[in-house]
Image 1 (cartoon, rainbow, N blue to C red):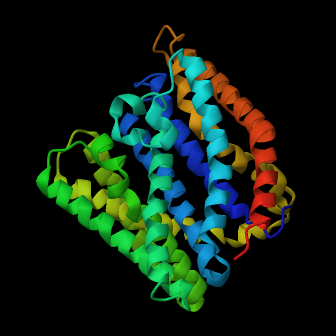
Image 2 (cartoon, rainbow, N blue to C red):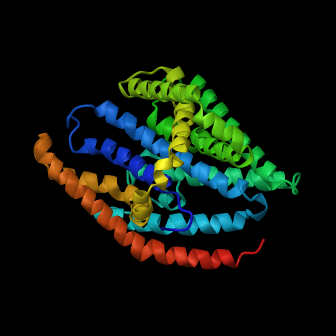
Image 3 (cartoon, rainbow, N blue to C red):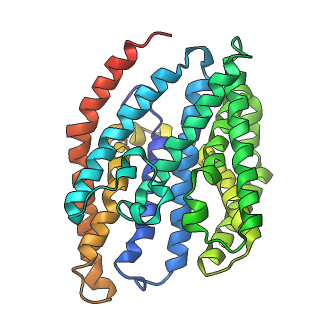
Length: 359
């Protein structure tokens, strides 16, 4: 097993990806077993899990040892880990679709152009994450001018400012455009979703700096029940919005409360005692590999779905189940190749470059 690797985090990534994959399976048949809205509701929870977990992991890397956090190292780490597989996916998608790559896709700005986002539809979440980090790091560097001796507090203030900014901008937008759709204009815009990552970072601060309070809150029965009710309630709001509701209150709340309660259960699940059982000790490496494949698989799975579903000539569940399974095998086969040929060599390069950056 890898050093101090938490199998719980790998299981969360894999389960979250499974929910997203299940939601997108509707391209094979919107009537496949029914439950179209329910599948997309659980899919949104899975996607939200990825976003809050990304914020949490970044926060942990900062708050555990703020004096060793270096913005230059962060970006070298981030770019080499994320961009090579992303650009390979862009090229692969261009070949698959027989179409040129939209220029703004190279800068991860396609979530501001609906037509160009359709080239690689799943890339919107990556766009939000990478562009959220830019104002966050700029604020952090600016605040360091005033709090150079307290880097942790400077980063915390930057996180809070990002969170409040997103909450305010989303509120202003919905007041001005109450009838706006929930997907492209709201769900996929960086300025309205930055708080999702900020929540994960705030949770990491609480865990690192106030561990006793953090553990007490997570284990409290009433808090767990309230979080469960909150998650179910936010899922119900999302389901209603998918069904065509134009309720602006639901539009605001669903992107505010779903990340909070999803994050709670991500934090609750990641440290369950079960992950220390011998089975998960032995399964650590396979889980780590499957977890690593979720990112390249996520990038192209929808393109494979569309490609294969075009050859399905009827709407019967069983006639489309086998092509769906075939699509998953194709997706993870592609992801494994990218992981071995692109990501692993890039990770070695990343470690070398990061070691040469001095604080």
